[in-house]
Amino acid sequence: MTVRYDVEFNSAAHYPANIIPELALMAESAGFGAFWAGESNNADPFVVLSAIASRTSTIQLGTAAYHIYGRSPITLGIQSATLQDLSGGRVLLGLGVSNHTIASWHGGIFDHPLRRAEEYINIVRKVSQGERAEFDGQVYNTGRGFKLAWKPEHGAPPVYLAGLGKMMTALGGRIGEGVMLNMVTPDAIREIVRRTHAAAIKAGKDPKDVEIVAKVRVALHPDPAVARNRLRQVLTFYNIAEFYGDMMISQGFESEVSAVKKAFQDGGFKNAMTQVTDSYIEKLPVVVGTSIQQVKESLVPFVEAGVTRLIIPYVPSGDSVVADAREFLRLWEASA
Image 1 (cartoon, rainbow, N blue to C red):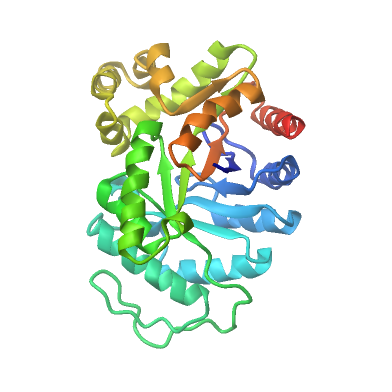
Image 2: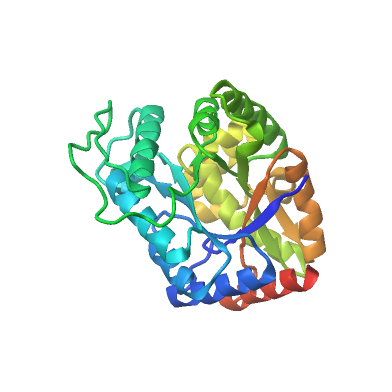
């Protein structure tokens, strides 16, 4: 089974915004298929990807994932059409409904997630391919008459719906070009693949055309203890974060998540990190690598589970995050 390797640089590190285009250019040279940018309280993905588009020529540009509460579907449709034209049609649109906390950051109320996602995607597609957007739904009403002032040179970008639950991943199979997964084990991926493909078939689609995109965090260092300690910080966050803790419990880690949450309540984040033990890390969908070859071998179970596109959110282990990222890309290119 073939798989495309992609990369992301905003996990557990703050990279200066002016460095990101350089890293993307290196990623293109190293053979990565796409450069992804996530959204939380970090640099805006489309702003960063626009800068990358001006420096690169072939690497695809993805959002992993944009929160739909952060902007109206009309706005994202305009942005998508613009970046498609700027980049020559290289945009990959990862979208997610996020959670109560992120919705509140943007003045929204977390409700009707399935209906909201479906209506949002419908409107974004219409706008980004230059169609008139007149939509009156349960969640969104666009009014009448909106249409781009220009005809986009490229069609709507493919949409990958971020989700973890049964209904959201099935929706991704039904209406999206694929689903986007995060912190999911190979065993759980197999079940999601079955569910996503079944929904695609029911919608009259060929399941082979539905991509299974998964993020698998990687830390690389000659000393595995150093790489493991860097991942420990990221994994602590996922154990205590809204929704992700429940998702990890659903994958069989109830006792581990409970221990981390209790430690956090008792003594804060650093105390919680002590409960993300080495044995727990070994069970989680992350890779501790001492070489690129070992990293690639460790990613094989995810491919065998049905992943067609692997995003590597690189977690730097060195003192300089930029130097560490450059070295990772150099080593990846040398291993090709």
